[in-house]
Length: 582
Ligand code: ARG
Image 1 (cartoon, rainbow, N blue to C red):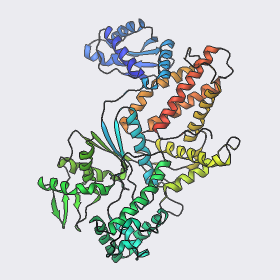
Image 2: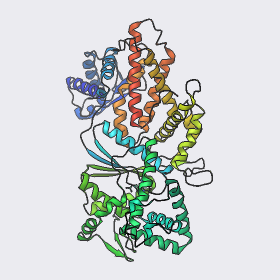
Image 3: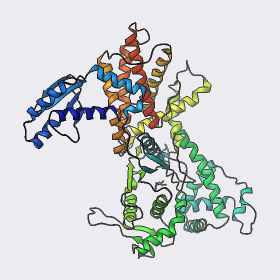
Image 4: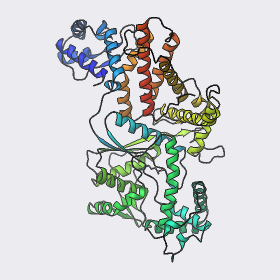
């Protein structure tokens, strides 16, 4: 049980002793610390239930509170708000418990199995800025969910189906028409064929093919035919596609690794297709398919709709299946293979209509139990200074690789040349760059757009990743220097700053829960900054290593350690690594 929860339970008991029952206590940290650290606001609600004057209720509760030595500074404000503070001893006791076991301050959730779909990288296309938020958010939600007791599986859900694959294969065919893959009479082993293409080539091939297809109708038609060939697993074409996926996947994985993003499952759209037959049967048997212009569609509009809800395109008029349909088939697949309690989709907010259509169709056909929560977790875009999605200088798509390098150029300038040699420099600058990029991405509420400002993100001062890293490294270095000194328990809280730190530590569990509820990491990002800033204030106020009062010094070191551990835990949730120095 978290310490905050324990506090709430304890207060509930006290309210009960005063003669009242509350279900959910309304305890909030006060912003007038001089009046009390917390405010208990239940008297007003109780007044309604018990038909009693709130002032009298508050007085009765206060009387009980005063008997308990955990609370001090108890007073009534206004119509019946109770202000109270925690006694120093109680705070110290809690902090020492957290020092022994950081998890004693974390509220666990009931077990649930959740699949988070947060990759969405498209095979043969480079990962670009649009994939950044999905990866950051999804990974962090997964780590947070696991910490709070859920069983969570992350799925990359690769975009490996549909027209792009036809375009890529067609362009390869134009470049290397003699490749054995295109030879109908080839009977040998495809594994023996040397493919003269690297991931760098692939990144160029797709945009080129895509452009050609827009200008040339026959080219597009050819690509369509090839798409069909791959989807029908025609020997040669299908084998080549598998090879392309392999090359592309290895490259995609490298970038995800840089971002500390790991998937438990590397499934793709194409893996869902084997469930298509069954999916089709389910929809047919339930009479949910309508023919319209040679296509099969599913009506998903509802009476309550206030904006247009177009039908879901199930099978296109040319017989191929749509992006919506692969998502439906994936739901079926996930249900059969993993039987999750929830599926979360961390995808660009601009795809909300797509998911609304998919979820409605899935519900209509009862593809998955009603209790299984399907949740679209849409995020805003990272924009350039012009307010449009961030692009390269010449208006092209900014790959994630280039984006990371852009930030790295900036962090390289700030690496301390006195302590870091040339060999280490690059790796450290990259770690700091990733921290800068990720932290800036978490700071706004996830559905909010934000502007990419490299100097600001990389700054060592302010609400930035580098500031957090720098401060955390400094805590570690202090603890290292004090290795031989006693670091057992906190014995006193000396100053207002220390007291503020203690209260903030108590809030940790709530911050975690709130982040999980809102499916946004901004609360955690904000908390990290606030806790770190408070700690830095304390650091500036005191000379820990030369302090003569040993009990005080020990208390300070333990306080440092608790903050250091919390910082590490939260940075770990955010997928941000802390370098040894910077
Ligand atoms: N590959 C898609 C894209 O780049 C994103 C996939 C999101 N996940 C999903 N289940 N549809 O737009």
